[in-house]
Image (tube, rainbow, N blue to C red):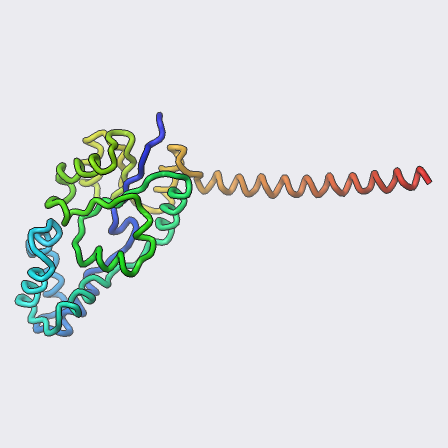
Length: 241
């Protein structure tokens, strides 16, 4: 099997973790409804879908959330409250860096919104370390809509098994598989690393450990050889006197 020519990563729950309940608590503290009510509004209202498909601007999104929750604050305060909910998944950030060092193109493919992306670009240096970004709000569609997968193929210039794709949601992975991509559900950084290593695009942890062990064993052997040579040399010098 040929090596994939690019690796595609989902963003949320793959490269970064996030928790909308943090935003819910912050907004509720400055509004007239409970944190649970804010969370339910974010989760179940069609507003977030419209925002993440670019159908409403961040100003419109703010206005509708404010009307529903009674939020008392500026749009700048709201933007910070809403977007500052991310933490990096460090083993995955490291994995991307290793792929880049090996010359493997990597891409972010995400259902997301402009507030989140603006925050990530400003606060997380790793976010700039990708060849390109396919973001739902810029293209009017969300995974698993096939139109967004077509954008990936256009922007990468690749199709089928040339693309290796990881996402935490099975339905998104299934849509990639249906297009012939090598697509996998991301469960843990360790498992994802092993899958990439199986394509010869990366050393697996076991291979790395074996390399280190082999290097250490070679160092020990060289030291022993040097010690033997020193002993032989000393014996030779004594004998020749």
